[in-house]
Image (cartoon, rainbow, N blue to C red; front, side):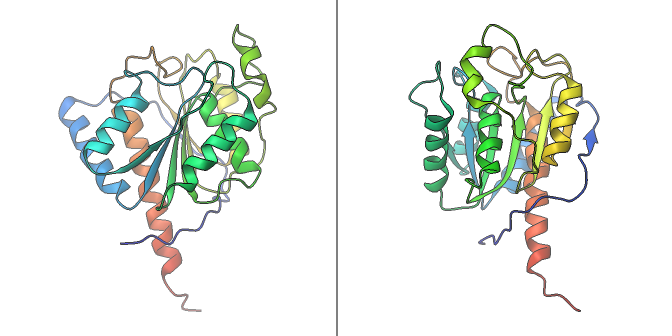
Length: 237
């Protein structure tokens, strides 16, 4: 079944969902099965951040899991993961999205989330219907040793996204405080999900397939589908 989807933000302010509780193993399997159903008809575009996502990163695990179960997945490949420039990274993301033949859901981490948001703020996200933004790097406020490597992506957009989005933030992320996560989610009109104490949710997070993230993606995909179905119903007025 084809999906006719419109990309416009929810007018409500950012909602906040409480911290994620780790699911039991059988619940994790159920989450994965439900996610496969929710993603049918969509293309998932994986958008890694600074230095890319290694084989044990949840993005890499998701890519393998989804591909093995028949979901269309594309992964953005950047020429320079260590010294990124916004112009080059944006061009690669747009090429990846244009290669998709289904409505696209972005699954973006860290600097990849910032790349996705900034691209969308410049009306450059045609074909994208939703985004899962995990641990977006707060480049405007981060002053760690890697801050210089991401400076080209500043400033952070402060306008609503043109599609539904979920922002997942960790309580102990060195790149993004929870207070700033609330600010960004409100500005972007994204739903904020508290991911608990999982650091930057990157290569060293050891979250496996990360069922909590899968559940957030499942709910996002289902909300997009429900909105598309509602838009397709003729008005009675």
